[in-house]
Amino acid sequence: MAKPVIPVISFEPFLNGQAADRKMVAEQVYAAFRDIGFMYVKDTGISQARIDELFALAKDFFDLPLDFKQRYALRDPTENQGYSAQGKDMGFDHESKAMKKDYKEAYEHRRYKNELCPTAEELAAYNPRISDFHAILDGFYKEAFKLSEEVLACLALALDLPGGEEYFKPITGDSDPQLRLLHYPPVPASAIAAATAQDGAGKDGRIRPHCDYSLCTLLFQDSIGGLEIDPFHTGKFTPAPPKSGTVLINIGDLLHRLLNGRVKSTMHRVVAPEAFTSEDGSEPILPSRYSIPFFVHPVPEALIEPILLDPAEKKMYKEVNAGDWRSWRTARNYMMPEREQYFLDKLGIAHELPQNAAALGCVTAGGN
Ligand SMILES: O=C(O)CCC(=O)C(=O)O
Ligand SMILES: [Fe+2]
Image 1: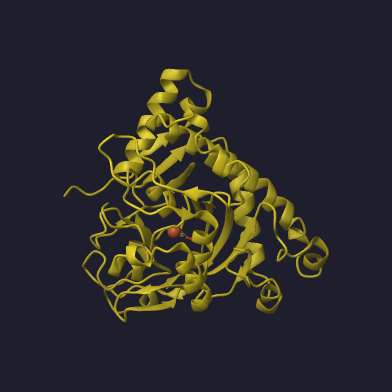
Image 2: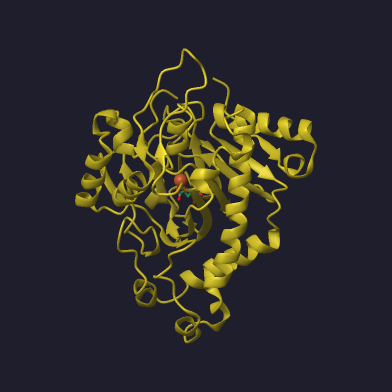
């Protein structure tokens, strides 16, 4: 099988072009989501200065003392908001077949509810430079939200969904997605990536293999690298290196379900990039890595039911309530087993989980 290539697509003709230009971009976007589940998008309208500002903010925030950050610790899986220290967020470990800690810390911000966000006064004592933490996050959030709506409109155009480009509006127009700042602290490369000549085998991660569970994700990464994708879910990962001037956009499980399997929710992970692995027994240290995903979740009351566009088509999945879905997967990531079970029972989809995909947290991976 040919090595998968993540396409680079310019969004400019969709944003500013005529109908034919827009349709051309829509077709490129759909092809990328259908074939590989990821695309690099350039000319998005989000300026590099805005992105750089957010990365600087993330660095300053994570540099704050741990006990300060812990005051804003995420508490409830229905909230998706606040700080998670290293070791709080889990992923599936292939070798031990158990959930294990990821080597990362995170801060999550939302559109409406940010009760666990430090105020300007609270920050001033530690680092006055980031006293406008909340405002900068809000500003970036708005732009990411706008871009995500445009990407969904583009996909709706490609598939000629009922209602045209407005198809996703009722479930996203007033939604409250999750902007996440991620910091992968410095770590000896050997701790997360066993030296192996084999693609995939033996490598664990700064973030373990998983599929996203939202509709789609916009991902901004710094220049360190290490992100890899496994589009065919065969255990063969291929790098998705940073490309300046682009944002990576990928499909999550919920959109895979909603479009009845037409687009791929692709497994991915973050490991030691090639440049930091060593075969001579020395212990290279991976430097800090920062990334900023924006997970596009629908409104919690939305019913996500596979859409049928072809008379012969059958539904691949049961309908799910978007809020319960999000709470279930958040509880799972944050190791809140009782809450996880509660929401899984409420969703009524336990029977759907293919064994290994469930273990990976990659729930609708089957059939891709
Ligand atoms: O840090 C990255 O590049 C990937 C992050 C990611 O996959 C996630 O948070 O779901
Ligand atoms: Fe992810």
